[in-house]
Image (tube, rainbow, N blue to C red):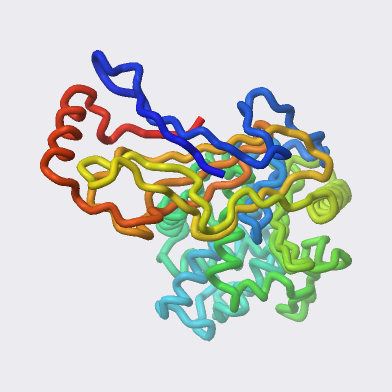
Length: 406
């Protein structure tokens, strides 16, 4: 299994040249244009949905997954991530207390008729309790109190939310408050929600455990965790539900079972019952309907990258770990892979150097994005080799172009 390369994509007389890496898969997988394949039948009626296999780093299902929509309380995952980060960095402690301001009490407490922790006006509440107020009880007052306590005001905190979203690569997310309350400009895509959930699970395991707590009592009022998966879905241990009139009923959930972890995001449903049913149905499909196919071993050369000024014109690329495709059992959707990088790569090249990204589509859906690395050292070439490459650069201007396998 090897991806050969040719040169194209140049300027002037060489405008017809570029680097193309052609995949050669096992016969059962095929290697055809993604546009020729039909997407799998929808396993859910949710208008917005995304199912991600964390263990295999693979997208199993996507429906309008990159369309920004109102996230409702699922937006508080961004609020929580900032608090978790401050705790991990030692800028905040779980025992530290924040005061419940009049603003937090009126907009998010008992007078607000929103989901609330029922924190008392001007009371001092520990961060550990406020976290449970947000996670278990979906308390608007708890979210505002955390935001103002950490940043001085909710508006300042929102600035931190948007900055952090960019750092985490949440390309389709815009925040206008820390609570998920309706705002026409507050949006998140299903894929972004899943990406943020996966980051929280991986980075803050000690705090992620709170998402599995079934209930929390504050002010002598016990409230059950709103996540319907925790009650009866084997392996469920997070994360959040959400509802506003604008968003409909939504959920981001995570389930660990049989050595696999799935993250599900659905939104835009009409009732809480429908939300629970569609979540279970999509998760069942994710756990039961797929089989694993090995595309590349960790040491397989999956492509060659052009090297500029090197002793060798090309360097083989490897993923360094096995690349597996999860596909529905009996699925005959065509598979296409592309390796993209900014190239050619200037010598010297060091073995293990990150070069680009292997992308794999099943049908029309991008399912895998895996880094690829140089499989060998390529030292600087002799004067003749560098002169030839330099002349080619002057003629074609192809340094810095994006090369991809088609």
